[in-house]
Length: 526
Image (tube, rainbow, N blue to C red):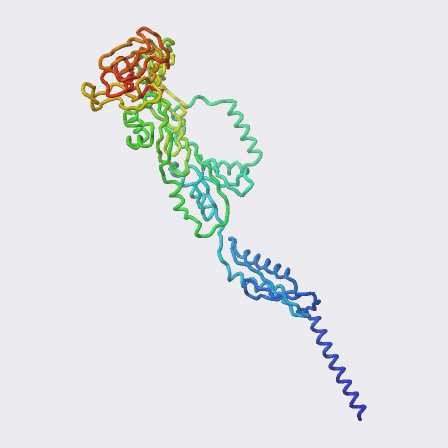
């Protein structure tokens, strides 16, 4: 009886051992349980944005799952999606453990990422015009913006703008092409014809070149708009932007096409006056004077070639367009000049008065926005000829004039003044520089001394007559160093300043006379 009992005990113990062994075997051979070696952290809990999404045996598996989840979320939209993606793995050391299927981890990550989308960036276009930039939502809005700039000068809608990749740029940059609707239709027609028809067309064109057409009459010309192009550099770049960074196409069109005041330069031409320039440029006289430091008032002197700062209305995007135009006009013939080498360039004489002619004209006129910039006459028919103006003019460079003293303080200008003392004039016919007695006085220009000595109210004076017929006078001198009839050169010392005659203190009085009348010397000194 005892033997039987002992046998059953051993048998029961063996069953328990077998059951335990079976449990271990099943654990290690089931796919969700993995045996580990005791080498430190060997099982990792995965957290995405602080949310637990599974357990892996290797952190690289977590990164692979996160990459696949991000691809899935990004692939659901054509836009660029910004989403927080912070993957953390927390390791532990175990003998054996259960890991999750990678597909299940990826699905959980997709759920977490979809809920954490921070921003969606739209596929957009940045339009750069010089230094101005505007962001639009799609290519069609870009085309609308650029087309609006054309439509301002193309009332009949003859031209269209297309966008294409710029072959000269490595980046995905678009450039513009402006073609007429007729050209666009011709391109489509050419692409549709067969090779045989194309060869025939080329032969026909070749024969037309051999047999040139006769001279065109006025009614043969197609008048109106013949070409358009943008006057500014345009770049269109594809990018991704947030909704708040985009501008509506209506606002963009208003910003780009409305005129704004921009600085420009006007070059004075022969015959110009300030009042005429103000009318030409549509700028009030006072504003024109305010913008130019060289102008004191409406009587300021201007010369051909002078440059004046002006403002012109101009949109951000300029459009250069050409029109073929017919008009009739009275015209002036070009002036005929006869050079006289014995005269100075300041001397002229009209030998023949002009008379206007009349003509019919077809011309190609180029505009930048609304401003006419050039004209090319392609057909002209003169009704009656213009008579040119004939002018004899000098070629010799006239003498120059320099300040007759070094330093000195301008104490009295040219023109009306309050008499500084009894006996002094209330209209000053020269300029005064206050300077100590004995300051050297130099000839302002070379010439012949016509007077040197006492000059009543002028005190001691020197008069010099110059080759151009002008005369200079130097007064209130303390000592005269030249004599009448003497020839002097520019810059030669002729006297010492003083306080003689009707004078309120040591100074030099200086005059320039043209045709016997005093003028403001400051307008003639170099």
